[in-house]
Length: 290
Image (cartoon, rainbow, N blue to C red; front, side, top):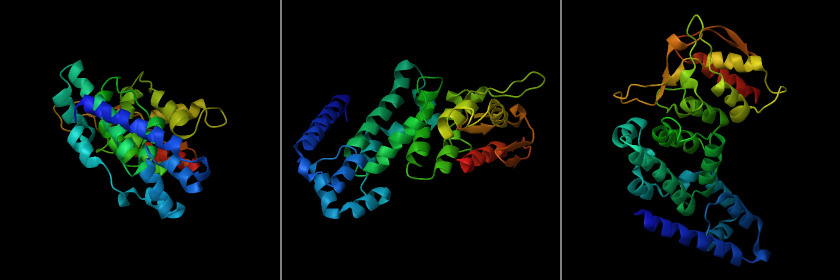
């Protein structure tokens, strides 16, 4: 689909939705109607009528299990295939110049809008937007343009209706198949504890506390907590070798890790400079605290 055709479809969809909402009688704004408004993306009159026929409970049950509903992934794959490609594929095929690097970002925007307008999985799409906003990264910083599609696919989309624990672990990129987009965006790729003067970079640890999990304020965490978490997260980064098919994915470098024992939010964390176990235990401790 060309950009012009896609833009025309978007405008037509917006006009249709505004017309449906405006023409829907206020007396007919039942609980089911309000449910559709709060869960569906660009719901049309047919969606409202189908929901009323199903009933409140049945409609909500279907929305909570999006696998039972039609999706629009075939159209997305056909028109904006980069949304499902790995960081390595995007880097090697679109990393030549500024113009080619804009393609992944453009396709992400178009695919997201198309899903919102046309998918029957309204609640799922709404929650992917919610979590993408909560765990946002800047695609224009460093390699965000190449890392974000994989990050979006395996964080906000994969865990949109899952558990908060799984979502936060995925956002931290703490396993070898996950994109290290957040770690790069918040500078944890520069978080090294190299003797004798290595000082951990606290940016990711601070935002992890204040934005991602707990919130801001002395009643929630202390500066010592931030310093401890930054130390625990030292060595968490990404594969940097551009010839490696795993480029951009999570990598733990024990040589950059500040090994130590901690009692973090009531959990004893033993030293480990071989695997990212310390950070995984710290994430679980914070989630349990929440």
